[in-house]
Amino acid sequence: MFRKIICILSAAGMLFVFPFPVHAADLRGSIRVVPDWAGNRIMAGEVALYRIGDSLGESYRITDGLANWIVGRQEVLSDEFLPWAVQQPWENGRILTITDEQGAFFSDLEEGLYLVVQTLPASGFSGFAPFLITLPAETGMDITVNPQILLLSEAPRTGDYPAPIFAAMVLSLGAVILMVLTENRRK
Image (cartoon, rainbow, N blue to C red; front, side):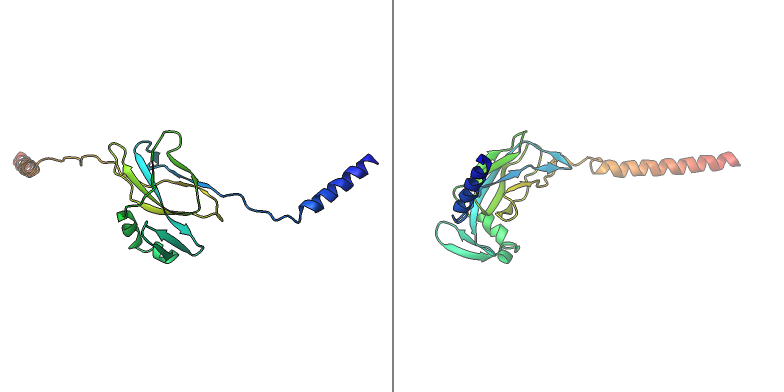
């Protein structure tokens, strides 16, 4: 009898709760930037992240502090948009140092369009090219990016200007002398 009463109260409680509207939680995400050189994670340098636009579905609202523009997804992916975005003096950027554990980890980010720029490359390495990244709520809000960087080293030296020419001349002369000596020995 006691079980029946508990079941009836539980069912009544569920029926009472169902009509209330359900609101999604405030979605926040993260972007992790870990520079990569030939498959090795490079854990030094600084990375800046700028939120440059709000997501409006198939377009973005870009705000530079003076005006708001609505820019389509195709325009953002064009070759002209990224150089324009890099030249703008974006405010409210976050700069983080790349650490051993997690790279540059930007957390508590809203959905939108972000510009990622390396402000200080690791010693001995080139900085990665700036890029745009979108935090969409529908595909997950935690993104890890491994931009490629290059090792900055002095090109191997094969010799200064006259040295290779003289070396080729000495080798050629040696080959000619060797051929003459072997020809005289046969006779």
